[in-house]
Length: 130
Image (cartoon, rainbow, N blue to C red):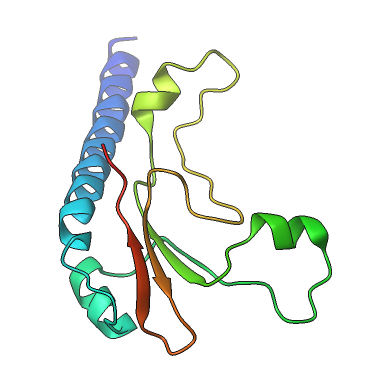
């Protein structure tokens, strides 16, 4: 029984460490994203922010699914943000405890968003306010 408690504490400690690292990374993203300027290339953005969590592309010209057209992005958008969100999931009621971020059609509201025009240059940078 004692061994089980030790393993449980180790697992909980590891999860908290990963969540703290992810939270710190997400907070530094906002500071670094402020260095991105309109007209920067994808390579410059990747140099400052690293690889994006998700890349969202607009629907193809022949796409006819109305739901997808309404929910999707209009320009290629790179999303940067936390992969875990323990802060909000802990306050959720039981079966909705889910600490992982799930992005389907667009970035999450708390993500740093970098939008690119057809030329591959930055046209808009959105940094969430705390």
